[in-house]
Length: 358
Ligand SMILES: C[S@@+](CC[C@H](N)C(=O)[O-])C[C@H]1O[C@@H](n2cnc3c(N)ncnc32)[C@H](O)[C@@H]1O
Image 1 (cartoon, helix red, strand yellow):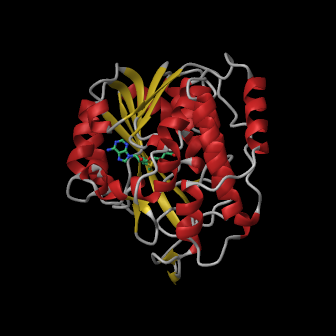
Image 2 (cartoon, protein in one colour; image 1 turned 90 degrees about the vertical axis):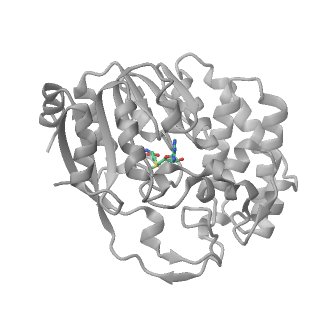
């Protein structure tokens, strides 16, 4: 068992983010010899960014709209082919805009209290400005990314948007400030859609990375504020958390969020992938046992498993909250084990594991 302690820069607070696993995953991918890669549940794009940084042509996809924005920013854009000063200037302009009461302030600062109203008004003004002035510019996605990251740094949640804190978080008193999102050089592609459908459309790659959800909590509902900020479609909302009305629709359900459908969906996905080597992350608190994971992955050849112990997701360290944001319990334990399952040609898989440090 390995114990991960290395700290990576935070992008946004995200359930299941693989921030702490990046050093191990990077070493594994580097020793696979891959020249092309696919990350089908890319989330923050944390892993895809690391893969792209190795000089590997990387495709990142996810069903979430905000994740597509991240993938357009960090994976599809070649950081070495753009003019960073244009981005700096646009960020400075947005930071200087006066606030303006709008949809965001009304729904996420007054009806629900995810952000302080002064920050919410500035988010409203910036978001309108981005839509009116940068829709057709290469700056559009980096600016949206920068806005989400800035908003995340001043939120008043435990890291998910199904509740806000009863009293304002200390960070929510800080003034919103957009920063350079730190683009990545190299070649990449971004897509949005259901992994089970998209997998059929992507060309074959040397390496695929799968990091599906591992419980019933749906990302669409847990990060509805980012969905609405990106889509800017200003939908009707409901409940104390003020979620988007379409959160209730079947369209946003994932086969990976249900114990009944998840095993078959993962099994089919693993079979449908067109890749030489597969890396799959999965969590010991989830529905599939280590043996079941091995069985599913063995459809792709030889299998090795690494078990990595690391601290639980930040929200679960803080406590368990009800919908009104009141603390109702403490997390059962603080460490969990992430299984990294590697499958493919025996020689490649064994080399990847053998070349790991420590
Ligand atoms: C465990 S998270 C991935 C975290 C990511 N590796 C990171 O480090 O940020 C799972 C992701 O799967 C996405 N997702 C859920 N169901 C999906 C589906 N059916 N197809 C594509 N993406 C899906 C969620 O939006 C979420 O971003």
